[in-house]
Length: 516
Image (cartoon, rainbow, N blue to C red):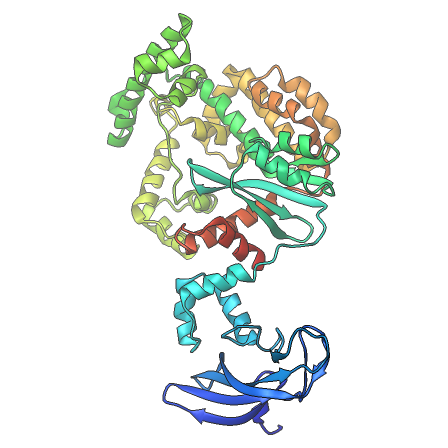
């Protein structure tokens, strides 16, 4: 192992003259190796030294102590006739110490990366532990100053919106899908802003986007030659939501199909009874709204008369408010397959089921598992009285799209009753299932026949939306590009934004995303 030299502790191009160990820091006095420097005006070298002065700059810490470098800088005379500069100071280059800098370049790089990774205040605390003298404001200034927009040619981009504040203010993110990096953050999601940004980059050939918003129209106007690709995940999710809406619209007929047009409150739990009472109140409001609709009253007038929100009135007119029991997502949902397996193996005790699930990573309480076991035990009876309690629309949609081998006996009976009485709902389910298979198998040739079949079903509104954006949907089925990568960048943007407590301006967010 070679000996450690003092010159290895300072940036290249400098030599150490002396080292002074003070109480809280180490001061290294250095000077430049080069005997001459070029004039900044005529670029001819000069060796005539006019005077000297000292520049102080912070450097990387050593042995747990802060280090300051004092550079003995020289002033030179320029003897070239006609040169407007007579006296100039020597420069050390951006790789050692930039002009007017108070930190060496290698320390500046560390400060920049700390700011990119942690932001302001967290990076300041971490830098203090590393013996780096830097404040939170300086960290953010360095991140902003060193921000450089990508200059790579754009051919394939993904575009999506993101929330400054949900339901209040939104921006737009644009990603280079080939390089997997953010290229721009736009201050809003207005069509004109997106259109102007795209029009300035005519080299873009493919744009992956969501079907919502005005991005499709903005791309069509700014880049008429570009291929638009709809996001595959949103197509799948929108199709499932369309079937869920169809189930909600059919809830009256579903209750009739499974023999539950009337509900016996005595068979309900306390929580279910509260939901049932809320359902009765909603039915009264629904009847009042539908009466006004049949009289030809405008939605704005219905809102004024009833005091309901515009969104609620639209839900009622579309038949989406007829659920009796509405369920929320449970911490047990991810573990239901294992729970069913334990149950089928003969384990019927709630506490034992809970203990087994804990070994599988479940973090919920014993009460959640115990209630599931009670419901499961009752469901196996499958008597007429148990069918009095109608599952929620979401539960029915899940049961109808789940294989029979994975359903309990009572759920199988419920699904069979619904399928026998509501062939239109079965047709809607088959239509959505066909759409999912078409995307998974990348078979764009089935799109036109699917649209013809779906137009007469309960998911006709979803099919109409697909037909209006047929070119982008067809590209989504056949193309390798999709907007999933952009969604991932939005998730990273949210993390960065929350690190700064939601108070970062768009230029700082852009600098941190691009710099990383």
